[in-house]
Image: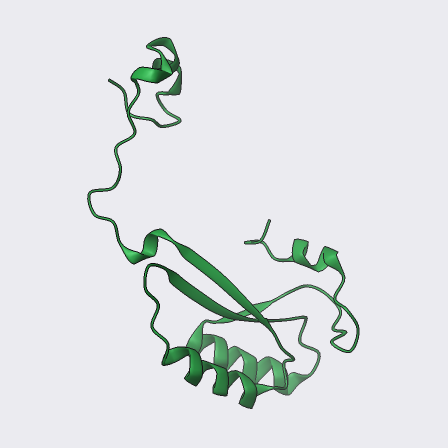
Length: 119
């Protein structure tokens, strides 16, 4: 028998893939399923993000881990840079995309490519 991994894949192929067995983790936890929930917001809407953190903090999830992240484009004002940096240090739930903010219009599809964890 061979374990299914990149290191010994040629060995698995040579001994027929049918004989390879994948060993599942010893314990199954709720972290097996993860969901990323991105909430589009503006950098200046600190009070709305705080309210949503309170709401999502009271919810319990069964069977999955839900990561709630606030998403917006580049910071343009100095006070935004300071206050959002403090939020990131405190909550670690903000994703800043490299794009131009246009919340009054539709966000273009290519902005999803600006997010390194999304591609």
